[in-house]
Length: 319
Image 1 (cartoon, rainbow, N blue to C red):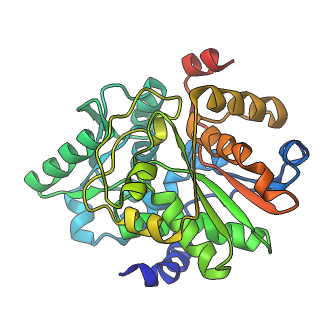
Image 2 (cartoon, rainbow, N blue to C red):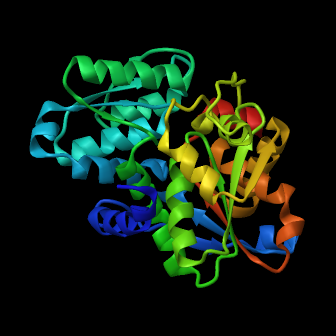
């Protein structure tokens, strides 16, 4: 499948996974609308099963495997949400597997992976190192590696979020998405662009880990260090040759990086005004929007609230 075929594959994915996922609300936010002067809508993927959009790509990928591949088993690498999603999908579909996580992964997310039925193993301190190890392990043991972002089927599954947005709001002028490896923004952005070529796709990243932004600016995937960030779900590098790089380069109009202070403040603003938990990655998209909100006054802006999995320790620190 090439990039031009992606919107059609996203529609297929949305139909394939419909019975396994939750169609999440697209809520109008009076708070952020009044604050910004835009018409702000929040796509609440924090209410998805497993608390994250990642379930979409996980189910689409596992459902696309052959019976032989399912029987042999799968391997995944994740900072948490992808691992939870893969564990949930594999358990639901009767597939066994191993999930590698970085040594510094959120304890709350690791426990959630275990509760979902996943076998957890630790490796590396950077998400990219963990991914590379998991891929090698899969090759050595003749298992299927389930990438968190560098896979057409995963991207198509994440894009089902965009299918829902297009059905829930007739006019979308801009969509703000937190970006790590780029799977979510590639899927959502590609589909919404196919519906309305004028929609603005905006990549939001923490200043402490902005590999995609720096890579697009450099014209190639580069390896830069990631500092600790509240947005652990987007932290880490991007593997060489990742298909999300080309997609982001082609469809993303804006890149916004935000400080840890702005991420924490966005978390507090959301939790105070909407009475729901979110994780740092979701707050990156909110903070990114607020940074450039003046450019979207009177326009319909969608912010993808990508997940709500936050540890009590992190929550205490933020509050």
